Amino acid sequence: MLTLEQIQAIEQSERQYFIESNRDQATYFQWLRSKGTNFTCYIQYLNSLSEEDVINNKIESIRIAIYAISKIFTFNFFYWTLLIFIIHRFSFKKPVMKIILLHFLIRGSGDVIDKLGEYFKHYYSNTPITDENGNVSYICQNNVYFTEMHPFRWFFTRQIGTVCWYFGEMIADWYPLIRTKAVTKDRSIWYVYLSCALFNLAKLSLILFHFTLKPEKLYDVNGVFDGQVVNNFYNTYWVIQISIIYTSLIYDFTVFFVLKRKLNEMGQSEFGFLKRFRNVSEFRILISIIISIVFLPICSVSIILKFYYRNKKGYQNLEFSFEDIRTMIANVQYYMIFIDQILLLHLKNESSINATTTPSCNKSCNNFNLSSISNQFNKNINGSKLYYEKLSNLNLNKEAEESKSNLLENRYSGDTSITINANNLRFTAMGLNDPSFLSNRSKGSNSNEDEYTNVTFNFSNINSYSNNFSNRNQRLPNCIERAELPPIEDNY
Image 1 (cartoon, rainbow, N blue to C red):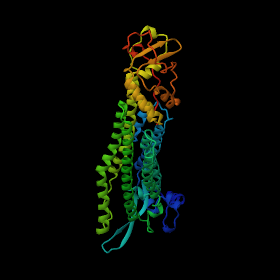
Image 2 (image 1 turned 180 degrees about the vertical axis):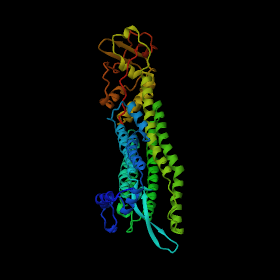
Image 3 (image 1 turned 30 degrees about the vertical axis):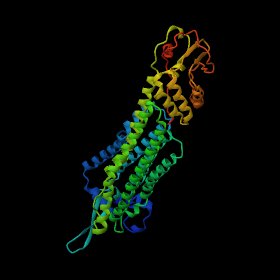
Image 4 (image 1 turned 90 degrees about the vertical axis):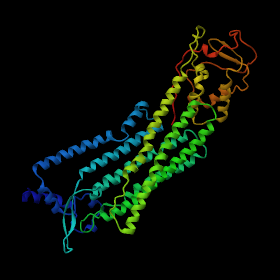
């Protein structure tokens, strides 16, 4: 129980934070810093506290701070993000790694802000009661049951917090665009840009809409929480949420069809990695599309019923919220980012391992560096390695690809003789009509030139057999030593 001197000291220091009169004239910042609309309610609350309650409140304050810090580690995508960081060795040079990092930091900050909002769990205001005769009186309302009941908590957790949550999502929404851009750069990519912009614009409109519900609108002139204003706000809020889900579906469809068309054009060759790459990408997008299609009608019907009962029967407080469904639909596409990255890295590593597996070399080859021969003539390279290099370079040369395919199909069909010395390696091939493979490859790979290569290929002198190999059916890989290939780096 407070003494009179304590009450006077509290009144002198804290009464300025209560808006008890001229509430319709109070400024935006006065409402943000306010502790309530009735100072007497505050004094009653303090008088109701026992010594044990005071200690317990201090413990609760410490607990909230610790939980807020732990929110970084309990964030839904924390361990997925950490796994990708470890796999990429914490290298943040690639756009994908920057996207994942910013997504984690910004969205995680929103969760921390939301937890810190629990410090503001009391707002001392009036609540009306009506007696048998219809007379209205006011009693104290101290607890904050909804975020909207505390002006600063609303500003901090819903206005600032929403900025963090949705900007973090918007950054991650660029991932499908970057993945699609890695495959195609023709005019169809602009459809993906347009649908991505539409998707982000819907989220931006939701962020801005939160700032339309200002703290001074949360309480009426009597210092009573205005639930009707909040209900009207959430009616429009859920309409915008539905539009976000619809634009997400449009974005996924656009990425799916653009990516599918481009990969079908490239998929005429029998590249094993191309098939798996196509399946992984389409799988990720299809999962998001299917889940959106399944649950979108539920969300749409909820909104329709909410407006029906509101306009036809005047029911204002029916709870048609589908926040859990909305969160599930939204998060599926972000989980698929991590799954997609893990599968791509697995396939890349599998391709590199296959490319390094070659027959052993005999003693006549021991003095020469033949790693570049392994790059060119390893049979496993036909599929994954060649395609992955084409994907990394982004500037795909279709004519060069056809030349590669022709050479690879016929590389053992003609008679081959080889002359090897310490400084030069000459290939003389019979039956190969188009020797442009190597020159085209070098033009398309200037930025990733193999630093281990010290051999020269020449197909111009197709005129004789060498005496070094009398057997015309001798297979070239028998004279290739196992060599460690340079790492394959993806550029997206």
